[in-house]
Amino acid sequence: MRAQKITLATLALVAGLSLTACQGGDDDAASANDSGASSSSSSSSSSASSSSSDNGSENSGDNSTTTESAEGSGGGQITTGTCKTSNLAVSGAHGMGEGTFTVAFKNTGEACSLKGFPGVDLKIDSGKGALNAERSKLAAPAVALKSGESTRFTLHYPRNDTGGSGVDIVQLVVTPPNETHSKTLPVSINLPVSDTTTGAVTVDPVGTGKQ
Image 1 (cartoon, one colour):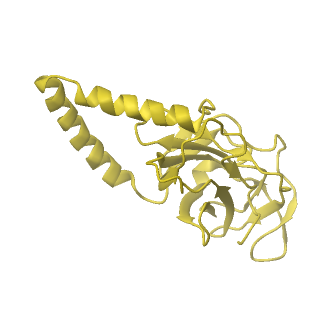
Image 2 (cartoon, helix red, strand yellow):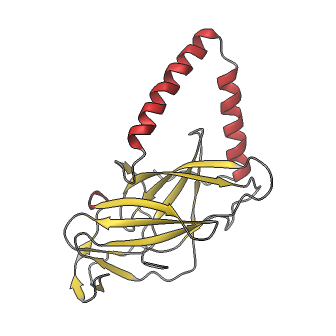
């Protein structure tokens, strides 16, 4: 399910309260927390790959079913159905410039197509909140993917040059256009604390930017 939009300042407050609560327990609670942390660390290690399991999320596409003739990255015209989350491997990397993160969809199934904006929720390190990326103003092209081909989109976020600790984002929950299931991608992004998120974090449509 899409996370509720909240400000970066609220995210920072939630993270701080979570840390204080962890420090204030008795010995038994501390022991339990240590055990939980060990288990969490082990789980994090095993899940820090470029793609992971599906999660439920609301439809974040452009509300149109993409069953049309579209140009694939390999050239030529092919007619396909909409790509499903289960047939898309998700990976990501920081862009050439600061403040950008590129996410790739690789088609692991039969030929399919994508058109629209992906849904992107940014999860903070305490796990208690998330920030939803807003859509940019770029037009969404139709992108056809043969088996094994990839396409990308770019996430834009403000750099933390305030000198403060900011808010640490540890996961992106990504939902392909016109899909209701998502995949979780581990990341390391630090955002400045702000009282507003209007236009602070934006996402471009699939198939735009450097492919």
